[in-house]
Amino acid sequence: MSAERAAAVARGGVVRVSALADGVLWLAVFLGGFVIFEPAPYELFLVAVIPVYFMAGLKIPRSVGPLLVCLICYVTGGLLSTSQTGAPRFVDALVYVGVSLFLAISAVWYAALAADDWRRIRLIERAYVGTAVLVSLLGVAGYFRLVPDPDLFLLYGRAKSTFQDPNVFGPFLILPSLVLARRLMTGPILTRPGTVLGLVILVLGVFLSFSRAAWGMLAVGLPLLAAVVSANFPTNRQRLRLVGIVVAGVALLVVLIAVAASIPAVYDILVQRAKLVQDYDGKDGAELGRFARHWAGFMLATEKPFGIGPWEFDRLYIEATHNTYLKALMEYGWLGFVSYVTLVGFTLRRALPLLWQPRPWQGFAQCLVVSFLLHMVVGWIIDTDHWRHFYLTFGLIWGLAAAEAAHRRARPDRAAEPA
Image 1 (cartoon, rainbow, N blue to C red):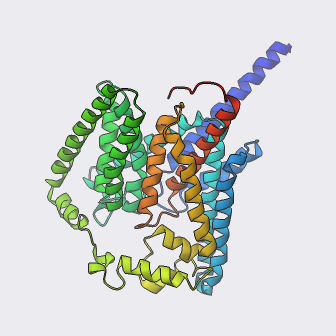
Image 2: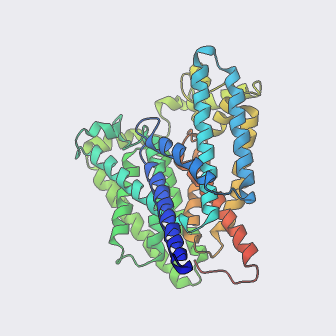
């Protein structure tokens, strides 16, 4: 075989391996939308493929080091916390921390992949949007009983689709909603009917999840994203066009909600979920309501440096913490809490510059950072510590920050590339 022939065969082999790796990554992200039982296909798939990537030479860049260190300390805090768990629940507590370890590894994996080649972001974006539209469509169809066995996609009259909880299903749709909304903010709408339809499906999914957290995230996230996009526009004409799009979008959203609310079953749940204080929140902040539990939990944490172990808070106070920061104290101890808060601070420091850097990945980065900020806020009223898509968000932010650092090192004197 000639040298030229051998080189051609080698190149073909590299292309096939690269295509296979891309397919595996796409499938991994796509499976993140199907968590109707545990262990979910997502976990089983990633447990099999992540070691292969690292054995094949995937490197963790030094700039991702703080993410790795914080997550190691966080999981270590969880392991120490299991020592506070009673014998009957000790094995379950270890499994719980094992899930945390898996999710931490997945975040580092995504960060390493994005840092290695930022173009993978496009693949991840397509996979996430695709699975989000599909599961949202299933949730909407299940809610209106348009599919066989619709109760499989419902919980307490709320759409949960292929998730176990509507309060996870709704927030899962936020990032892809922002991605599609940004496409409409920055490009011609009339030539993108598929984008419009996809966004409508996602918004309906968020609405029918009846997750107050998801409602708030969408209501705040869209104008916040519009403000970020507008600040990056070079002309007032573009900003004026964006204002028109936002007004039209709000009008369409009001119409969709009005039409949905005209259905009696939807209206009843809407009125119930729209109340500021639910029964489990505690009437007027009464004892053992959600916010009273928060206060009691933070006071208890001052006496428990190792925490109290997974699910022990639920046993003591009947209900879950519904607060990611309190959960860190209760189930990961002081070490886990400090590690988590430090990770959030480091991530924000890495994330915010991505909003303004004119890079090929800027558009997705803007949506990613806005989504991350929203999750940080709702973490005060809901537990996010085992949300798979949240760890994906962590990983991608750190991966893009590493890609930005590599870009600056490689081309310090070149002008910024357009987004």
